[in-house]
Length: 184
Image (cartoon, rainbow, N blue to C red; front, side, top):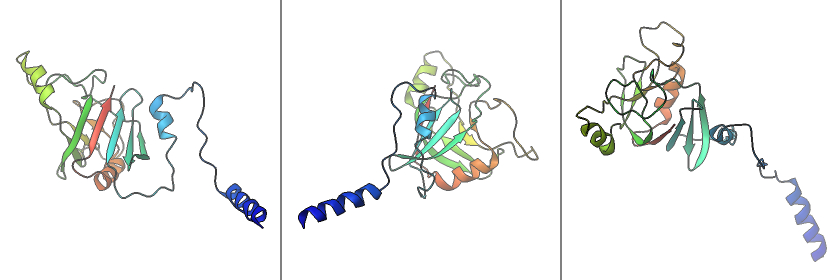
């Protein structure tokens, strides 16, 4: 009888979905794109608690409870997308760990979520050169004056731009205080 029960348990275990296969060896996909492949479309979530941006891959992954739940591709950055923002007017998008510290429903760019740049280190760096680090860095949509569509290429002064539909989604699922890490 014990043998029968053991065989029945093994047979049932074989019916359970196997864990997802993890590719071994080098992959042709960039690291964050490989991470985006882990997203399970059926996973439900009400909000994200961490955002990871990769400027070189032009994508952002939203995490909930340590698991990737959503990816946004084709991000648009400042006119000078490479390198960390150092000074006001350099048109670079910051790199580092910040938080979403507020929202602007009256934005000129179809909703916006404020990034906590500059932090103390950013201010100290700019101060040693007698310059301003700048500020007003947001995740935002397209300009309100643009009828429909999307401005091509990088065009912001250092913000991260999304389509209007994407920023509406972010507005709903990204609470104030969410950590955003922006990588080169």
